Length: 169
Image (cartoon, rainbow, N blue to C red):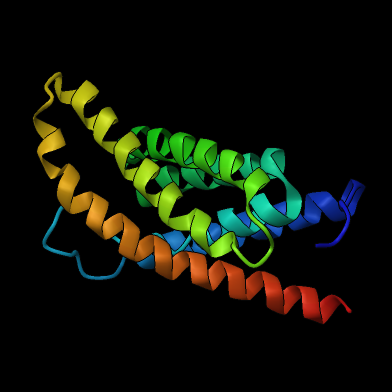
């Protein structure tokens, strides 16, 4: 992986990653809804995984936070902010823990774990909003979906990182 980017280059990279993640998030929101509420591919998380493993936890948190906030604003759904922030926070924590123990060839493994924690965070937020644990009934379905979607986004993030590393040489 390349060394840290500083100054204006870092700011430009963070802005570009945020714009890419937001565009993917908004485009994915236009896809038909899967019959299980809360299930989606989470393609914008490819950018978060990239940012975590290439730029570091602080920069990944900035990209994630900006995408979550702007996604809620641009989608016109303020409740999205609560669910995405809760899921994003837990997902980010999982990525931080996994970042230390995974080699560059194992990055794809981080995404399924992050997706599981993202869904758990969203369910906990839903339980808090409705003041009931009933939302946890969706947990088995969302865990299966998280692992499947996480594998896809993880493999995509791994491929992106390898491709960009080769392009830098």
